Image (tube, rainbow, N blue to C red; front, side):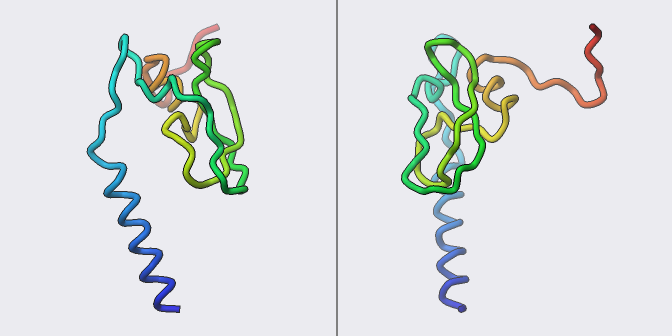
Length: 98
């Protein structure tokens, strides 16, 4: 049981170290990861996620398998649009007038 716990910590530390401090390259003001094709990875978790479709220039939902894949993978539609379309996050409490 302790071995599983230690291995889990090591894996999590590797993930954190591998993803921090790296800024994606920008091309034409857009994150270059946004041009990657959607990649659900080899696992089968089916996590609802978003990717940027470079042909339609829209963020679309897909099912992420939970491991591997690529960087064109966002937890929310807003995160995808912020990274790939350059939209700023809307401030909490500010209502949109119709």
